[in-house]
Length: 86
Image (cartoon, rainbow, N blue to C red):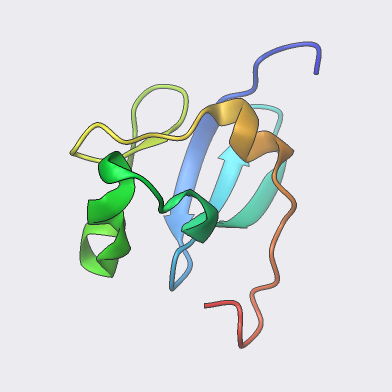
């Protein structure tokens, strides 16, 4: 990776999936369940709280201070949005 990507748009897609658009115009739907470990991410297990994500300038964050590094999101493999991915 030559430069640090950043998130410019994020849309909820059901379950723990968010469609993420990066500054290079690439898009992917990411399943965030892999990050729902540890005390800072505990509140995100509640789907209503999970849906409260917002863009904090370069990545996705939540009101409790949890966030995911934009390069981690960029390097994620896109998930299937078919049944069973929720």
